[in-house]
Length: 91
Image (cartoon, rainbow, N blue to C red; front, side, top):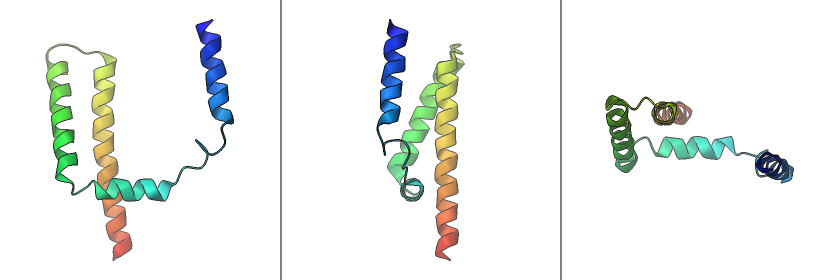
């Protein structure tokens, strides 16, 4: 029953035009680049990474926490990459 409901919801979501098929990559790139020098963003990443490291270090090797740490590290890499790309375009 629940499985059918989830599949029905996913199919309905896919039918909504424009939500997932028209993603503005340039807007994402600009947003990521603006976060590079934002001290609030940097502090959030530091705090979140420290929290995850403490949780993992306490012996909770749940995939969820490992995945969240990888995600926060990947976000930081994407911000750095976007900033470098924007800097190159500006030169």
